[in-house]
Image 1: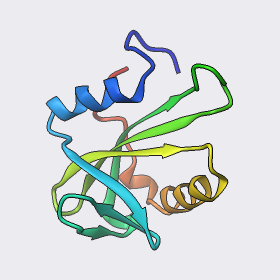
Image 2: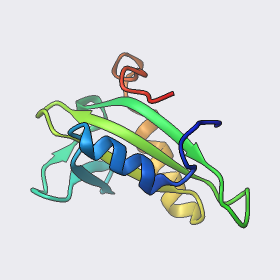
Image 3: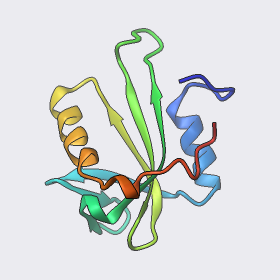
Length: 111
């Protein structure tokens, strides 16, 4: 994905943090979990407002995906899917594939 921004996930995370996307999320037991308060969200309770694919600097096949998310509770933040571990990648793909299409937009995409 081409952009005038640095192709570093952290640069994008900082840009979105300034826009109010301050929560960090992880996946646990097929749920998205807000690290700050341990609230859990099922796929239908999550909204994807932007998504970015990054290639590894040294190895272009070492990719990651940065998701910019909102939840049904109103929290906004990011989830970084690293694709270097098959188990982690499969877990993330499984979760994000279950998010209803109506919950996916590009409303806050920087590009």
